[in-house]
Amino acid sequence: MRILLAEDDAKLGNLIKRMLEKAEVQVDWVTQGDTAIEYAIHSPYDVIVLDWMMPVKTGIEVCDHLRKGGYQGSILMLTAKDDVVDRVLGLDTGADDYLVKPFEFVELLARLRALSRRSSTKLKEDIVQLGDLILNRSSRSVQFKETEVQLTSREFQLLDLLVQNKGQVVPREVILDRVWGLESDVSPNNLDAYVRLLRRKINLPEGDVVIQNVRGVGFKLEAHHVC
Image (tube, rainbow, N blue to C red; front, side):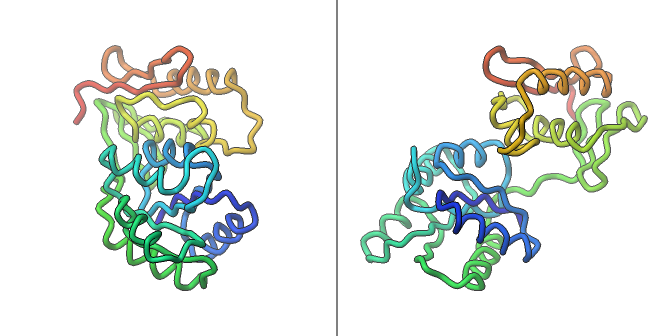
């Protein structure tokens, strides 16, 4: 199960993340509503957990934004607001469930599992083929024209993120956060170097699979003749 946790309380967010990881749940943790939207758009999650009160955009605003944009995945709202009118507002905005703070971790985990089973989020395919390029997420391997390409863990994550968002521009900030993490000191120049090396390693054929540099924004993978 893969969860996006949006919680601006550092102590609570860190605690939830650690407890979920102990339960073998994969967790991406962000502290702002606008960042939660970026993550939700560019990565698949079984459930998104939104704190009601967050800076920049509240959990309610994030939920409303995602639903109006057609997001179909499960959303759980966390809040200290326990009035009926608040619960109704959260559900009417598009949340699938609502958990009032303080809560027991076992209840949170049970609700996440239930939402994950009901989630309509399409699971990522284990194997994706783009022309002569084959990416296998289970074995974390890449083949080009039946020859295995040796990629580092970071290079594989970078390629996988671009493949997940084929045809869409992935902002540099999102790539740096998703591949290297918020605390990384990787610079934009380092990212450019990684992309150049990745292009060379997978020996992209002309016109078949192309990693485009969208100036001032990020990168986009375009694939033609996809199998």
